[in-house]
Length: 467
Image 1 (cartoon, helix red, strand yellow):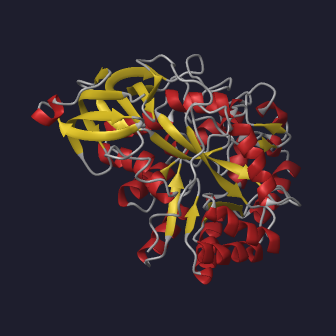
Image 2 (cartoon, rainbow, N blue to C red; image 1 turned 180 degrees about the horizontal axis):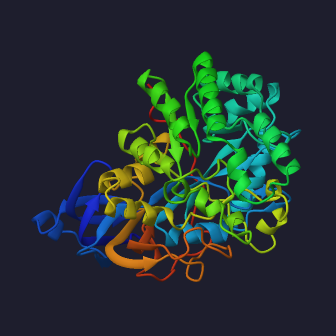
């Protein structure tokens, strides 16, 4: 049975264009666009018509950094693939790329299979996987080739968390050399974890146990040093590099320098670094624990450099690093010892709205909003133009966005499975109204009409930015 939908009268915004156009959707894909009011647009016929007059029509968001059900610090991220993807849809995101985890002593395949089992049949929107590589050996390196062939084309390594995910420089170099051969992209958590552990131990010995010390020991200089080292290792290997959750202005400077030299080096930041700061980590009565994530929140003066990096394209992507832990019973594990607070913030539902607020506030343009939230992540991780744009042949992942609606972010009204909001009480202009995933209505005029199991696994090609 063929199904057709037409979206009429909206301002269609992509990374490259803004046009008042009608959008024809057929069998889950964009079939055609035509300027509103023209004979071609008037000729579109459909079973269902959506009036987008006065609204934006934008591609569904691509969040390339989420952690649903991640085991961490003796507990698990509180969003399942079911709750997390439903919340993503509420926030106008229609594709996530989550991280499957290789445990030390186990194969990449075991980790990937475990994540497929968690996600399959449970997702409201489409999903893909990166692979966390925790144990680099000859077998792992061979498996990387196989994973690239089957559409898992990016591999995350950690210079942080010794004894958990940590890789030393030799392991990182070997993985980078392999990715240079197989076309994969190494994603790096760039913090000097060995040095940070020394500073953590010294802080605790001085009795500095509150959440704010989490930010003080994970110094911006140690993020910059690790970023610099990762860039040089990638240069030696002849491999591309994607640095995740960049938070420190010193790290942005390292990325800018590398890109000025023409290196295939890319950077991602997250809304928490653009809108929150160490002031939040310092909130009294252990409230600061809600804001513990790594890389950590930085002093406010770093925000201007991050916005600048997004405008100058020294940073290309804004993802969430969505990794929620409830305040009660999870964040509280670190009372009396900040190093035991599970690292991570909820945010998958808030990203598109916060970045629209950045448009309202004059930090970025409308097209740059779509570029950093939809098109570039899709290109970076081999899903464009299937995802990340509105064009004939693309998946009909479409958001009707009301740029004038006002909202206040609150845990009372959000749909993430977590007992607090990192942005509680923040007033925003702009709100998601209707969301289609492959032509199916998931959010219909602020009502959830999707279901678990609609979302399908999406294999990916390699990074589309490599020179």
